[in-house]
Amino acid sequence: MEYSGKVFIFLHLTFNHTYVAKFIGEYNAKLDDKGRLVFPSALKALADTDIPLRFVVKKDLFSPCLEMYSYDEWEKQSEAVKARLNPSFNREHAVLWRAYMSNRAVVEPDEKTGRILIPKYLLNMIGVNKEVIFAGADFKIELWPKESYHASLISEDDYVSLAEKLLS
Image (cartoon, rainbow, N blue to C red; front, side, top):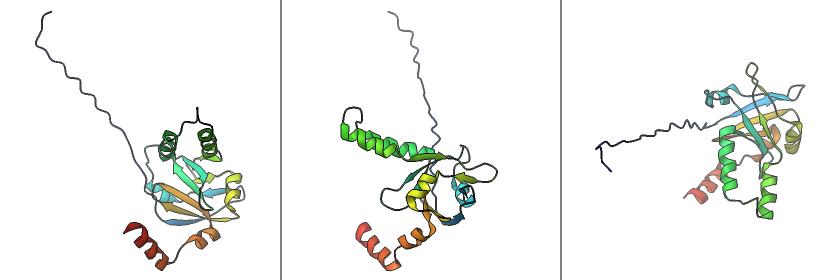
């Protein structure tokens, strides 16, 4: 076998477009007669404009609020959970995965009006009557009944004590 002296180098570059929105701030909204909410424009401005604005909405595990994840963030979160489970061969894992995936909805703000329609059963799970708070929480948005949100806030002194305990 003869060696030609040529060396081929293959360079493979992958450009992975990853953008994680950092949602901040609190915004009031009211349900209209058809059960729709206007998605806050300030939160919309923080999202990636290169992809359609889609959210997965689910009930929070610990608080009486809904969590809204961008679809990309939802995929990341659910893959992390699924990586710790084997639902095909472990009954408890299968039960947990089924419960984890239930009571979820995909919502998209209307491009023209910015309104979103969150299924009534999800709003009922947290007791929404008319007014809500969209609360930015870094990689997700929490949706609270207005009264519950204000009741869930802790005092400044409690915040400082908790920060010292958990972060020092």
